[in-house]
Image (cartoon, rainbow, N blue to C red):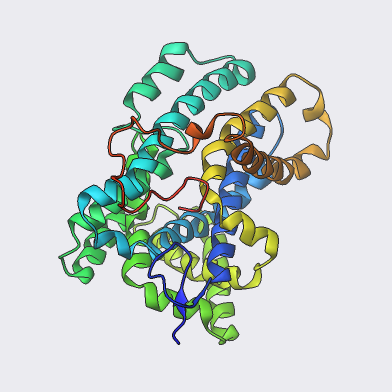
Length: 360
């Protein structure tokens, strides 16, 4: 009897085993994302988080490459279905939660910047981001927008040679990671990280083999190479030298897989199996806490700068999961699931949409 890999519902079989390092990797990546946003917004609240901001810069080459590669790892089944099934079973959910949480996020952003920075307006801070979000994502939820785009692009180009896809996306990624910036994080991130989504999709076997290898020395060497390169690029400010940060991100993917093998704790795997609700809700929670901090004297306590970012990360992760659990009981399941009237509802007997409570 064969064993089938099951981290996303792909290729169900008689006997399945879940790759715990994949869940650990997702948990690690989402925690680093939340830590990144925690440090940034705590800085806006008046806390000196420069040390944590520098840490986040060093680990940035691991955080998003790992997240997108693991998102692509089990995406292959969606290239085999019809466009209608892709929409109803995957993209529809992304589109709905992106629209809902972009509205929530834009409102939280406007209030947060008014309270902490005494700037921002209703029109520019709230209405414009909401109206422009489908084509011009500007806030933290660009990741959801990019994932929906990536699934569609991958299906659209499914008949092309994977080597050609990787080459074109790799060139775009190398250029974008060398300092290319637009006003939309969604545009930036899509060009930067589509290559890594394709790596997860087309080099799936290689990545799973790397994550399952017993050659610990190989993983340790990959992690050490990434760490040295990341520190060097940060210390000497070399990230915008063409191609260097792209190579750093490739090493970051290897290091992320290696680290995922080490941090396979139950708690981090539980977080990794439910990343989407954390990604959706963590920023409004962070903003709420930071607004309270900005109105108190907490920021003046010396130890706050060292402990506040990881503590806020923990609060945001737990808060997001509790909100996700409580929403259906409070009649707010629509925060995570598209209602029946939203276009593209699956027909009876068709594959059901993947719930937003699960990992993407």
